[in-house]
Image 1 (cartoon, rainbow, N blue to C red):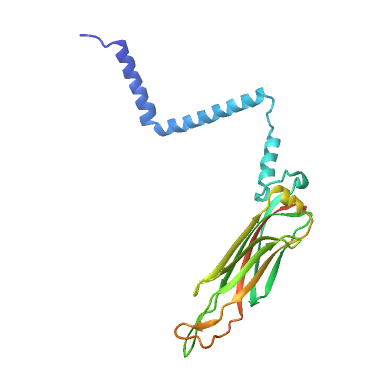
Image 2: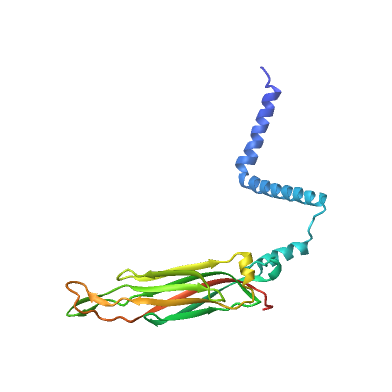
Length: 234
């Protein structure tokens, strides 16, 4: 009888090893392989860093992580506000305005609070139609919203009216670059100005308009999201 060749014996052995490692113990093999890849990568990284003389100690690494994640903010490296922490706040306001009247909402700013970005959302809902023998339809209300810098200069401006029977919205924002932001440092507060430009009157839905019914006011709701750099110790 012809004896099996050595090559065939090696093939059978490799087949048994493959079955043992990759079929019977596939999960364990995957876990061990993952750990080996992780530790080998870490070893290569440390070797390269050590060869360049730039190995950071545990304390230095923790300090970097802490500084970049403190209060979920970022530590500024801009020279004029170096070390200031980026923070966020929300300002809310609501009220009722008469036609052609305004309301100002202040955004505090000073040497230790430097404004970076402001997003404003204004919402209003017109009053429903009324019946006076026949139906009178409430015409759209027109609002205006502005963001003003500390000198009163308009940085963002939008006017809009609601669709009849629907709410109205205005969204405006400013996002200051580094140079502009620093120019405003310590100058004073910013402000948001809301104006009811026109409160549409009630007019007949059908037929001749012999007489309109006045609508002189409306309510509004405002929300402002402010991003700023904080230099206080709090």
